[in-house]
Image (cartoon, rainbow, N blue to C red):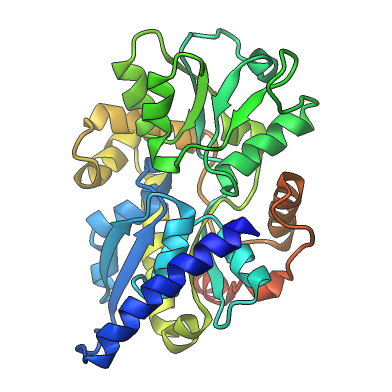
Length: 341
């Protein structure tokens, strides 16, 4: 598949650079330092930022350095090249590498979010929005092969509508890079809708007169494993204590969010979102709390995994399902939850 080939070619180049560095000798990496790459920067991942800003990782003796991939394929390439120890990305990336047969394959060891975290933004108010309102219109829905676009396709088709460019179809564009969606949508007068995560959705609506957030895809789509912590098999095996401490800090942050008021959570998030006010962050936090966005136990279920497989098969990016145990390792999430039971 083209998606696999793009990942593999980029990884090969990155691996060559990494190997050259190793040949000339580098200081051994500190065991408790974690290079973490996130697929995008969004309040959708609030437990991660709360864990960082409230010092929960430090309390576990970990030092986390966060970088932004700007797309799941780039984040996975960072993991495969060794420039990231852990990535926060869609689990579909682990499925791709599993089906490609990559050795020391990436595995999901913790699920952070359990539904689609994007919102449909319209250039018009669209009171009482319904999926049928997009018939004959265009929506930018993310990158081809990425979970946001595949989930939107699944939603459209499972509601009985067709994707295409005729007047009785919905034109789903998947040709726009994930981190360019807002700017392309804003500057293309032929596109009425796009999907955006928070705080981008709120920021866009605030800056573009007449635009409106009209729907939450998380509410429409229901439960699906959407964003997970992923590492290569040997990293999880050799750093089992680090993985457990990492998830412990994230679980503590989740507990803080669900037991605190939205203003306190927004204050905890503020250092990670300098361009936003506390009030704007509160709105976004409440939006994600309302759709029960975060997994309370970080365990991916086999049923959830099967839902993911159905979405991917429907999108035509895979033709058969991966084996759950080949892609998911719930050992450490289960251990943490058993200790807190």
